Image (tube, rainbow, N blue to C red):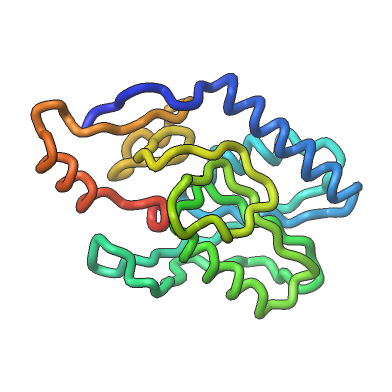
Length: 196
């Protein structure tokens, strides 16, 4: 696999995060919010977003989940690897995701938090892929909609690499790899549902 073209540059990312922060400030109208980052991919986005919130008092917490078990394809079951340390009852919760792919894991997280009686739960995602079946996934605050590329950077990884890139880039198979290379990469890669 090799890093291909830049999909979203650093300046565009910064502007997108600022726009989302302004939307949250508008909607919260001074009410505090608990930002729940989904580890590991959301960490860069979460930190930048929190710093850009001007009128919303925020506290931070984190969830880490996996939907893969021992295989490379989603089992459809979410395993909680790190739970919140904060009581969400009666609070405005904003789940902060790096990317919405199929949305199965995100749906499970919403269900889990719903059992803990928050005042509200909203979804904030930096990226959402245009793929069949995820149109109904509710995203209240969205940075960018992208085509179905495998992307890295700004927290997103491939085998724990590339998270630190200040931009979003497309990861591509080596030219000589052809279809076999693409299939191997797809089998090996951790998808957005498990890149935690």
